[in-house]
Image (cartoon, rainbow over the protein chains, first blue to last red):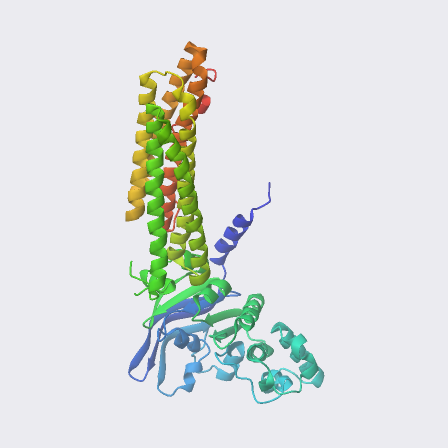
Amino acid sequence: MNMMSEAAVEKALDQKMNTVPFKMIGKDVSVYYGEKRALFDVNLNVRENTVTALIGPSGCGKSTFLRTLNRMNDTIDSCRVTGKITLDDGDIYDPSIDVVELRARVGMVFQKPNPFPKSIYENVTYGPKIHGLARTKADLDQIVETSLQKAGLWNEVKDRLHESGTGLSGGQQQRLCIARAVAVSPEVILMDEPCSALDPIATAKVEELIHELRTNYTIVIVTHSMQQAARVSQRTAMFHLGNLVEENDTDKMFTNPDDQRTQDYIMGRFG
Amino acid sequence: MSTHIASVYDEDLKYLTRRISEMGGLAEQMVAESVRALVNSDLALAQKVISDDAILDEAERQIGEKAIVTIAKRQPMAADLREIMGSIRIAADLERVGDLGKNNAKRVIAVASASLPRQLARGLEHLAELALVQLKEVLDVYASRSPEKANSIRERDNEIDAIYTSLFRELLTYMMEDPRNITPCTHLLFCAKNIERIGDHATNIAETIYYMATGAQPAGERPKDDTANTVGAIGN
């Protein structure tokens, strides 16, 4: 008998999870905002083609950690990052690194949909143009179509590509932002509470999208919804007061976490 | 464990715990009364056990409904989820315990008409005592949620199995002695089997409690000393 039961297949996949290579490695990452320390020696690795969810109460440092992964914190003057973060073994804080290029490899989707006040078409082509990824109009057309398709938005907007991106519904705008992130062919996509401004249907669409994007990209998502973390991710990391409390397989995290603080947080109890 | 931020959630969980304890108390009482009715040929008591079963069935339904609504409303996680799933399982086990008690009670009429030796009744009583101790202790463990105690109950189920096997042999002997004993003895055999099953349900509950408390299944096979299924086989 070489037929495996569904449970056995899942178990094999879970075990395989431990052999998935790391796309990004965070070692002893600390972040300071001026005098205030926001992250304390976080050691967290992100696996390739895996959705990693970062959870924790407000102010726990999960968004701060996310933003260190594409140096988004550089935009804040008082912010200082120590420790080491690598992308495919390359130190992303190395002085020789071109931050713009880094952010093309590690894209980001924000909490509030923030399309440019331009057409849908231009929203998607903006990145490829500045990164010189397309030469001809035909190349751009192709990028627009594939990106919008990957973002599950193509069928809804293909007849009005030259209308303004801001005229779309909230959920469509967020998927447009995902299309914009995907257009520059990133390797990692960071999502900072991508569904918190969306209704349940738009949320479900974005979650479905995350599930599909996982095949080609590595995804790190910050979410306040435990159910969302449980639904979309394979690995979950729990932050508390600037510390990484626990990182585990998502299935384990939400049924039988190792740490009491994780337990209290996900069950909605007073810690 | 600390309380939930949403206090109504705690009340929902407390409701389940309370109802399970109530079910446990009633199931225990039904089993004890059914055996007493059997030993004393007390038809009125047997009738009471039979009608009590409806209360137990209703309680199981209510627990199931509350559990479903709580899952839908709160999307429980981790220990809370295990707690609720455990409640559903324990309620089902207790409902089965009640059914088995009821089945014993139904046999009282058939057994009452025969005059069976006192010794046989003693054997059955002893078996029931052990099963009731198991049931009582497992309900105490439910209240305390101690995984260690849950495990120790699980390991004791083989005592019941061993006594059941010896009772089985004894009943066979009576049947061989006098064919008129066959009808009542067969009923008693079913009664003994029912009681043995009650012990198994207590063990199921112990395992569920262990899972609720730890999130892991208890280690190793459940000890088994029930060899009645091979009694009479060649070489036995």
